[in-house]
Image 1 (tube, helix red, strand yellow):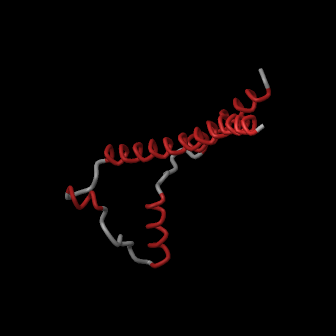
Image 2: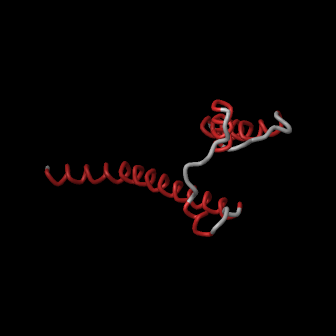
Image 3: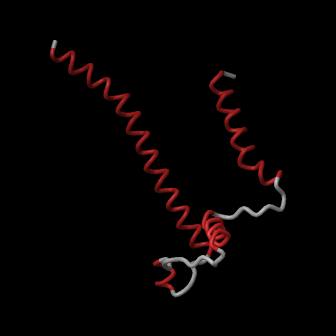
Length: 112
């Protein structure tokens, strides 16, 4: 196995351990989101319950809270768009490096 493959394999194993480790080490712990943590911290500091400044637009349109499945769908779509933008950017940079050098060499040969 080549050195690069070993590094990739070790990195993948480390990422899996970092992602799944807390689930086994901290059994029974509550993993809440940043919204809940922020609200709890405001209540702790001020001594009052936190009231949001506004209601999300979609919740106003449907007249209630979004179902968890819809929130998950929106999150997945947002993630997919982000991954698409990153993949396009990396692909563009690779293609520019790959074909940009060839075009520069052709221009140099034409001027000679």
